[in-house]
Length: 221
Image (cartoon, rainbow, N blue to C red; front, side):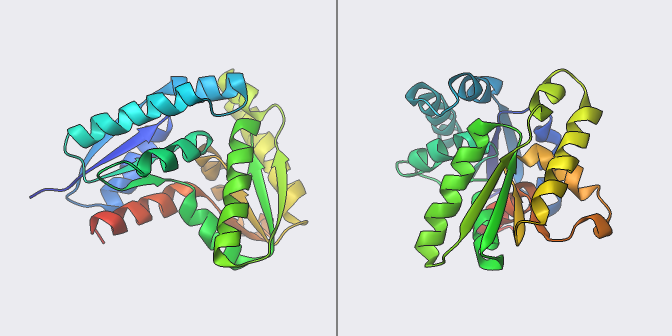
């Protein structure tokens, strides 16, 4: 019987990124992609995850369960905690995309930089680092940074300015830490485009690691 996964996004431009990764890492597995921009939009407006946002994400997860999916991946770190909450009562695995990279980061260094373009994404990632470090029995120091103006530039369609600001933010952060976490999946392509000489520390992003974890859960690898 063909396996099936559901991938839930809050940023439309990430759907093709994850579709390509799933094609590569989950061959023969059916994919369903759900995009709900309102989840992130409302998290930004409230600068936090609200019960109403969590409830809407839970609705998407229940719909995916009812469709017969074998596993669910939520690609937005801003609603990651809501994904964890929904996972407790779900009948199939529900994964948050950033957990695999956080686990890898806390095993890679003590000073962990977290770079984000939104405070609504920064805080959930920082909290996840602290929580998983405690679970793993590791002592870490989190160095959080928000790249001011980058998200507004992206929303206005100025991709070049967004990318330039992210590169500047990364460069300013990397000399202060052992490893850098990119809190948003959309930032990965910016840092990936940098030459090796511009990356002086290890950089971790969520898309590939998240899909690798999804593949392991459904037995695709």
